[in-house]
Amino acid sequence: MKIALIVSRFNEEITAGLLGGAQEALAAAGLRDDDVATFHVPGAFEIPLAAMHAAESGAFDAVVCLGCVIKGETMHFEYIADAVANGIMRVGLNTGVPVVFGVLTTLTEEQAGERSQRGAGNKGAEAARAAVDMARLLPQLKAQERP
Image (tube, rainbow, N blue to C red; front, side, top):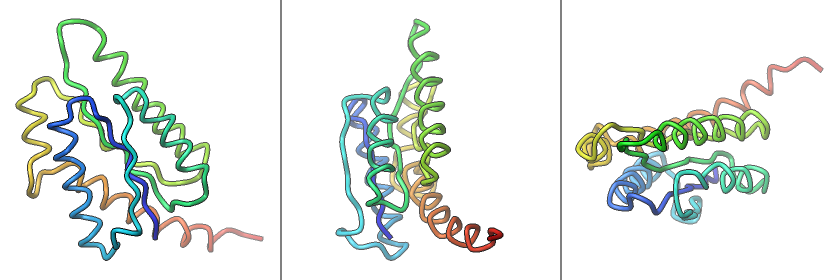
């Protein structure tokens, strides 16, 4: 199994925690370092485009998207969060490759920190486990298709 990790550099202290959690979860699932490719993008808005290229490359069984958008005083949060969520969903639906949403959309930096710390609540780890599950499930579903 090959997994692509698309990671936003914006809010890097948070996304580094998500990335660490994802890497730990993938290692626990039996993936080697060579099975995982990490690609960094400037911000969350750029995640869907990079995810699309990773999914379309044919090199990956799943793509994990990691980022963090924290609400500020303007509508920017709503626009970015909505665009990223819809873009990531569209990539998966258009390519048939599992593309997992591991982008935090929080109201405060404290909430983001809690969700990116090492341990049970790390959302990067949760996204990585979902990617592995989906990469295993889709071939089973395809095998059920009628000729």
